[in-house]
Image (cartoon, rainbow, N blue to C red; front, side, top):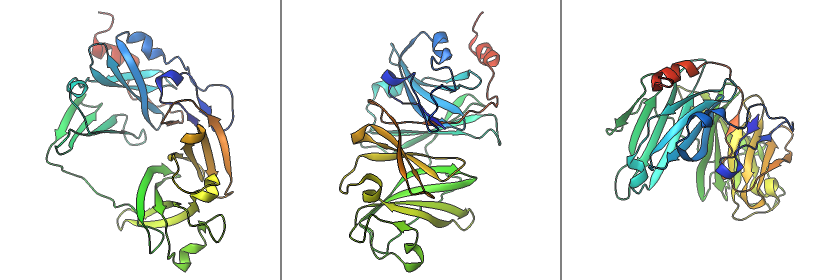
Length: 300
């Protein structure tokens, strides 16, 4: 598993979780040579081998680019010009791609202006257009797991992802107490006086009943050696094993934690990036370059 920094000044670098020094892909991102109008570009997300970039042009148009580094295939998503000129209180993009189910990728963009309700837009590479869901229709809601402890001052989901065929949710719990005896053997603290926040890892065992099972819970004091307010974020759970990867902002480090070994190790350092989307190569076609260029009329 490889991690690319999101900050534009660090594009072209990477951190390899296995420690290798050779890049698995062309870090020049060759699609950039075919899009000379781009003014700024940011790496925003990744999903099953595809990278999602956000970009702007000198005309202040905003848009997205989806790129597969393994095949060097790429596609643009239509610009959203209005978002560049209107103040946005909330703007979150979810990137979805599952080559085992469909060759098409999807974007779900949740945005809101000051004093207004959120708007949900969905984009499919199959149709090539956005649709706006103003009625808030949903296909299904899966509630996040509750706290490990019976007493807690706050419980917040930090990360949702898949590993080994299961859906995981990772919560941060503030001053959790009253932990049931049947769960206490899965909670790891630095010592008996450790009352720092917990990082709890849950797996969804049954989609129909929405039953979550606690796999592991570790205190922030045991992870970082200190308690109190900490600047960190979980960025990935390894797709094939029980390792978490997280950013420690105040140290400018990317670290991993093994749920089995209970060991923390530093896997790399960075400068300014706030996000590190994980990348695992995918050699499935989602849109050929020829099809894409034909769609844009390149070469005519």
